[in-house]
Length: 159
Length: 159
Image (cartoon, rainbow over all chains, first blue to last red; front, side, top):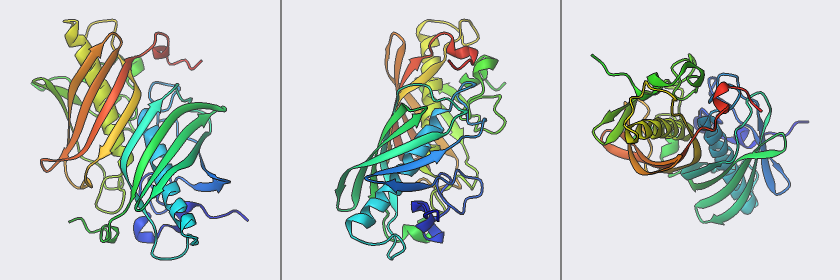
C-alpha cells in the first residue's frame, strides 16, 4: 500500500498551496515522503515550465525546493514530538527565507528528484537543506528557513 | 506610446521562459521597465497562485523576483555598454543564486509591484537587489546573482 505523503495530512483549509496543496487543481501537488533520515519528492515538469527550450525555469526549481522543504519541516516537527501526522493541532510551516544556488541547467524532459535534510530544529523554526537532482546530478542546492504558521492565519482570513 | 519592456527585446529563441517569455502562452509574461535608476514590474496573480487562502504562494514570489532580476541584469548590461536593447549580440542572463526573505504575507487580490536595484556589475556577473511591494509595504526582499548565458545554450539545444 502506498503511504500517504506529508502534504496529504495537511488539513483541508491548509491544502490550497499552488506548490503542494492537494486541493489546488491548477498546482503542482508536490508529494513528499521520508526515505530514512532524508525526505524525498519526485516531479516531472510540463514542457511549458521552460527557461530556454530544453531546461526548467528557475522559478519552478525555487518552488519545488520551497514546498519540499516546508513539508519536510512539518514532518520533522511531528517526528521530533513523537506524534503521527494525522494528529492535531496540525503543524504547518511558512518560509521565512529561501536560498537557491543553481549549479547547472536542469533538463526539462526528465523526472526531478528532490531530497531534503534537517539542519536544525529550534522551537518554531526548522532549517532544511534541499537538493534537486536530475540524472543523478545535483542541479540546484537550496536552504529554507521555515517557521511555524502563526495561529489565526490558517483560518484563511487575511488581516 | 507605451515603451517596450526589457523582455520584449529578448530574441525569439530566448523568449520562452515561463516567468517572463513573451512567447510562453502558459506563463506569467512579466514585463519590466526602467523607472530612473530602478527597474519596475507590475503583476496581478491569478487566485489559484495561493499559499493559504488569501495569500500568494512563496514560489510565485521567488519566480517574480528571479525573472525581474535577470531582466534587470540584461538591461543594466546594455546600459553600461551604451547599447540599445535592440542591438546584437543580445544579452541574456541566467540565475546563479537567488535569495528571498519573506517579510510578511503577500495578499493575493492586489497588484504586486516589483522593484530592482543594481548592486554590482562585474564582467559577466550582475547582482540585483529586488523588493516586492503590495499596498506600499515590502512583503519580500530578494537578491539575485545573475550571470551572462554561456554561448551555445541560447540555441536551445540541451547538451
